Amino acid sequence: MEYHTKIRELILDGSLQLIQEGLKSGFLYPLFEKQDKGSKPITLPLDACSLSELCEMAKHLPSLNEMEHQTLQLVEEDTSVTEQDLFLRVVENNSSFTKVITLMGQKYLLPPKSSFLLSDISCMQPLLNYRKTFDVIVIDPPWQNKSVKRSNRYSYLSPLQIQQIPIPKLAAPNCLLVTWVTNRQKHLRFIKEELYPSWSVEVVAEWHWVKITNSGEFVFPLDSPHKKPYEGLILGRVQEKTALPLRNADVNVLPIPDHKLIVSVPCTLHSHKPPLAEVLKDYIKPDGEYLELFARNLQPGWTSWGNEVLKFQHVDYFIAVESGS
Image 1 (cartoon, rainbow, N blue to C red):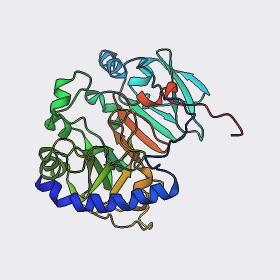
Image 2: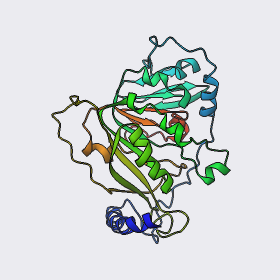
Image 3: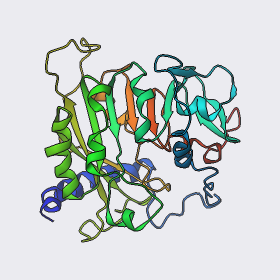
């Protein structure tokens, strides 16, 4: 409650301004207006195959020599990949258009200029073999909480397991690290006092994602004692022991403000966070290398890793747009 009291006015005032803009511009609709009267309700696809279970199976595949087959570059328009190809390499779509891959009979869409590794935390070596370091790393860890503990649907990691993610090996000099976090003070303190220091990362800002409905109301009452309508992002910079020249050092970026608000209508997909590329663009160098950890979808220009990294790239989540429309 002490934490909530400290940021309450900021959340209230900042959100109100953005919500008013949303209503004015037509992104949000007042409650009394029915939007898209003729639209059909969206039916979400069932899990066609469990990617996390495939990752478990992959642990038993013979491992490749560290130096060979570091990446799998997709050349064909429609590509079938074997499980062994997929789990032991970073897969790249270097083209400027979306490609389709077929895995276990299911089709997944890969955005242009995207790459990914489908694996669990015990099989991250192909990402380290990728010979890339990243200017921005976004992490959405599966935090342990009571509802997750009661449910078998989601796996979670202990703080010690999260701490073992090899961020120092993946981060470029001056890398910006962004970690999504729930409102539990235990997790916030852990990031600021233990996790970031163990990775030689200095906290530079704390941002807030405020969740609203299509009509501009908070998804939960702001002062609800149970669930709050906001989550946090802790931003930090990797501190180098020795000064190294930065990539694109001649490009100026804005200093990162503290307590920036992101206000959006949450996706209907459970726990799906808004993409941050657009929000971060003023504070990062263009044409950098960007990485998302624990991702469940892909983004153009980004490398993504996770044991469900293709989940929301399944073709059933997309609607084909007719040419010319």
